[in-house]
Length: 326
Ligand code: TRP
Image (cartoon, rainbow, N blue to C red; front, side, top):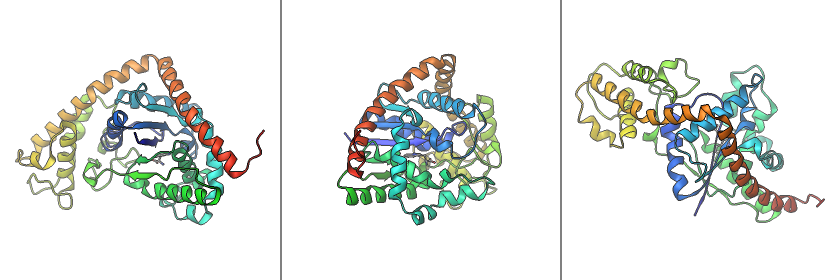
């Protein structure tokens, strides 16, 4: 069985792009791979938060992930700060990583530009991400295209460490879904759907009530030529609707294009399909919210499983780098 690890930051509500682009694949992988999914609260801390905000966001994200189908009895779902080996290996990875390598990270450039306070940890963030992955000897890391550079860095650090200190880490592969699986912003269909979009009307949250979902699809930006066709380059809005409808119903988006001659019915059907997709998820989420102690219990089970693997890796790492046994 191959080992899979991925991480997601607790920085706000999950949206349809997270669900269809990432979380749905995780839900599938949990049945075929030995999978670890981590709520990366240490990473979220790289950007300042108000008191209480981080804990609430971590709990909410864990509940959304479980409601989306991650089964803590099947996969290992845990919170990063519950396994202190992440911070420990993160430090060691900072020592293996070149300053110049971090300077080349495009996500740092993007994230630091728009802020007046840039933490040192925002800069070293990719070294901690490498630690997340290498602690579990992950073979495969399912992520979006935007994380490709971080996974390349992780591979590089694993190889450098193995070369310097002897074979210690598995060198992981990125596993990136094909472009068509990307969900785009409904108002701005050439941009990825994102929680930080200019207009909330372009982003469908997993917690949006049915009428809000229907309205967002009804108002989705298309184009003015009135032809329903699957064509990413020339018809990004219509293509996005077809992709979402296809993903929500398990049908081929190009075949769906042939069934519509007008935008109105396509928007209405896509809205309905997404409402149907979200309905069971929202019911499960409401149950979980009633009983936060149960979520805490599930996360403790995950932390115990993850912690055992992480500690056995750290025993190898500490010996390899030459920490004096206590
Ligand atoms: N940096 C990732 C993101 O912004 C989140 C992340 C942290 C991650 N650690 C990880 C993803 C380990 C995959 C594996 O989406």
